[in-house]
Image (tube, rainbow, N blue to C red):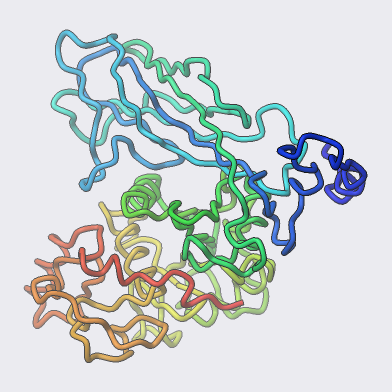
Length: 434
């Protein structure tokens, strides 16, 4: 059992090294949290990096190693593979890729054993790395706070055993803003006090340090039990954001093997009903009913429904609608839960508006607000003219295309990606609503 931090602090306050070597600090100083934000003021917090150092694969073909739903090797196409040619099956392959980070602050002091972990999946693609691939297996890699080489992780399937070798490196760090609980060194919109609370609850997955991946906390609500993101959509989204320096945390009821606040929602008196035209305002009401106030202050929320409607009528239907604090999104298309990148594309588009991005055509430095604007109300910053093409960004929309034929072509060629000039314009946290 963990001892209360206040108890340890009170005891250690009695330990005075005034008669010790001058280079030895008092323990109480090492455990001080001056601004009470959940991070030690001194370099007594711990950052742990899980690295996939090497692997051996039993058969020729291509392999993906997914860690927390991010596909490695990470690539712009989101489908990179570790290729095993003839003659190399079963031979250790050096990799050396950092695949996960965990942090520990005030919450977690005194924890023992292996309090951290990462979910791992291996996918095999037959030569020449075809789709969709065969899932070799799933496992969880667990680790503590010590720099170490973990025991090999082995996952077996019909063609043999995949062996993954991981190391853990541990590094101390100090509170990035020791006198400001509302500091935000990594500029993800979540104050360090909020990241400490989330990290403590979800076992280390929110990182406050400058230069770390920025965190996006996304709660996904379902209007009924059969409404959910497909596994492919989750992997596409997680991998795309990871590639661009953002940890997109997807809470559909669990997050890092811990109970969250997503999943099937209590609709209460919100006006939202399964099979109906759900508005963003109703989605916000559902969020307020189901998500605790302390979490929703720094969280994005999406409600998966039958129909997204701006005004609750059939005429107002769309694939998704956004207001500050909430997104409502049509779960499937033509009665199908997911077609190719439909779910990932619509959700990434609506999140783009929450991040204050506009439709490409509106990024001309003059267009303000409207259905094509970000929700934070700035003038859409100009981007290069070629990138204003509605088929060159997931932010493209049929409403901006001149006719149905162009709209159909753009739907087919639109990438699951923001335009290169849009990524630096992402404003995390600008649309938070407590």
